[in-house]
Length: 153
Image (cartoon, rainbow, N blue to C red; front, side, top):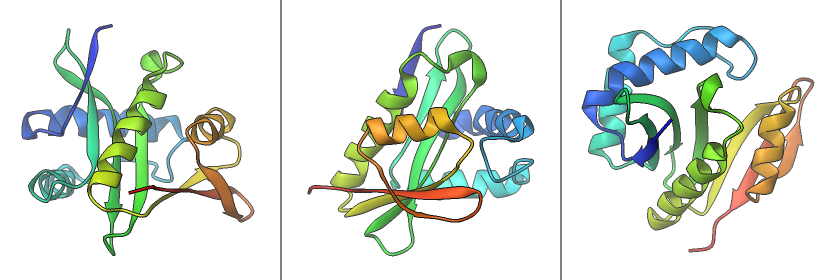
């Protein structure tokens, strides 16, 4: 499974949306149970591309298909809200760690001071990944942890 990390490109939006749908359907990693409508997804990804928002696609080069992503959208220019996902066959191969590191670097270059995320308490694998890459638990509710990472600029 040869993969590369790429800045999002329009040609991968459809496969990104399909990947998002597959992960939503698993029902245990994302807050969504199904992806946003395709036209909404296209608008969101074009904004990420046009505004150079920190984001990375994982591309399976054999199939020229997006099989994972990580992005950090910021409302205030200082704190990025992290979202990520990787298709099941590509998990447990170190891709998540490399993907997070790539987005952390892009966030720092964009002047972000911090990255935050929410993760289901039941998602032990993701919590381990986030802690391994420097995130700490900063809050919790009944079902989720909020985790954050302070960036050094």
